[in-house]
Amino acid sequence: MNDTPPDLDAFLPRPAVRTRHARTAAADADTLWRAALEVRLTDTRALGRVVRWRIPGTEAEQTYDAMFRAYPFTLLDAGPRHSVSGLCGRIWTLTRDYPALAGPEEFAAWAEPGTVRVLFGHWARPRGDGTAELCSEARVEPVDRAAAIRLRALWTVVGGFEPLVGSEPLAVAARRAADGARRGA
Image (cartoon, rainbow, N blue to C red; front, side, top):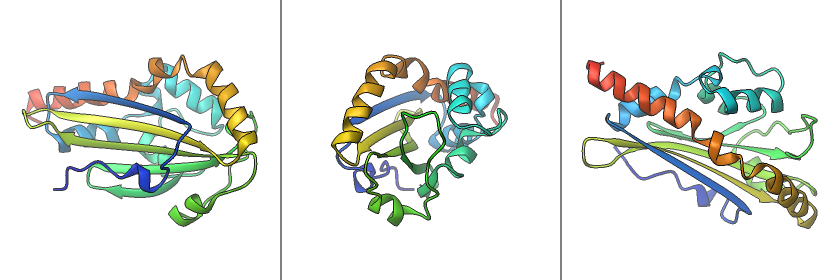
């Protein structure tokens, strides 16, 4: 199986904001990826609440995997142990004004002034020592100068909290995968 992470540069090569989290689990990559696919918003206290506040109508019992495959997100690429999703719009407003994109081509072509393109990549890979690593990367690229200014202001406010909540789902998945591996599941 190909253990190369997805090529996020193919979708968003020059982000103004980039975050990356990784968590190692005492499990193989397939077990870790399956555990990641089952993490629900309700399994993560802070991030689950933030997501449900920012995306009204999102159910607490919904998995992150299902969320990243449905509006307002667009699935851009998926494989046996990875997924890449994106959304476009004005992420700094409280309105839900994200366009429904048909796929990777519309995401790549998005250029509406005053907006950003946001990319979310998730993947699991073996580490070679009997463990695996679950990775998550988010990227945000403003379409123009006005969007860059708004994004910078938003990131000044929320950027400090991102490390506290961004790795929550990874920790849940790593714990569940390791527990399953110990039980022989």
